[in-house]
Structures are given as structure tokens and as C-alpha cells.
Length: 191
Image 1 (cartoon, rainbow, N blue to C red):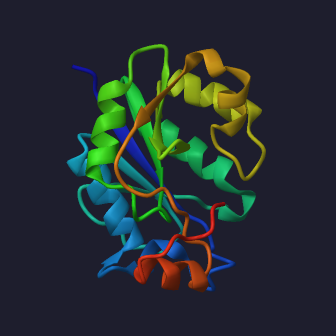
Image 2: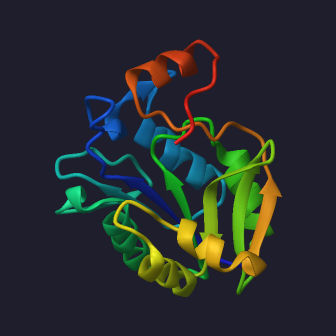
């Protein structure tokens, strides 16, 4: 059985939200807590949460502080992949996607095979988690713009991508209006 580490990217400032998203409580739980639980219950270990200085990191995640989060998501992804250790693959989840739960993570982790890229797919739309080897993540980092992750690699290497239909919602919560829509059962604006 493959060992898949989980990485939560949670160091953003939440500029459009007005507060950092990691501690934002949605549906009774902080977004970072929800993401860590989804990865843990979805079969990932170890779990790394890339956060801003001063963030509270829930167990069983290990916190890694991004000292320069203003450099963008790529800087957090690089720290997370480096901290994931000797796992066979790394599953990456964004902190602001509370509709992605353990069932989705488990399905994508199980669908991953060495040398491939497994991506969760929600009603025909790609979302997270994205699972691939650390080596492929490092290749993605060389192609990514400062505020991107795997998007450029997925576009450049569609022959490696395996989409896995998963339950849940891949909505990003970027603004207070997105949170209000989410909590009322509506759909948030896609990023």
C-alpha cells in the first residue's frame, strides 16, 4: 500500500475575506481544522499544514510556517512538499474548500498510481485534492506562477492526469459573501 502525505495550504492572508482563512469558522469548525480532518480521515499521513506565523495547527498535522506568504501559493506548496518527507505521494488540499471531505480525499488517494496524477472531479469540474509524487510536484513548481500550484503541469501533461469522480463540493470561499452563500446552502463563486 502506498503512503500518501497530506498537505494543507493555509498561509494566505485572506485579503478578499478580510481575515486569514485558516481560523475562519464555517459550519461550526475552523477551515484549517476541517481540512486537516479531511486529510487524516481520508488516509493521509503525515499531514503538514503550511500556515502563517502564529496560526494554531490542529492535530495530527505538523505546522510549517511560511515566512513570506505574500510570495503566493507556490511558496507554500514548495514548503509543504519539502516537509512531506519520504511519502510515495503528496495529496494537496486548499484550506478554503470546506465541501471537500474525507470521502473525496480517500477516493483520490486510492485512485492514485505511481507516475500518474490523480485529481478529484466534482460534477465534471476538477478540484482538490490533487495527488502525485513529490517529484512531479517539484516539476509542477518549476512551471507554476507565484500564486499557482499544479495547474500548468496539468495543462502541459494531460496524458498523466486521472480524474476521479468524488462526492462533495469544490467551492472556494474567498469572500464573506461566499461564506454566506455556503452557509445558506448556495454555491460559492468559483476561483
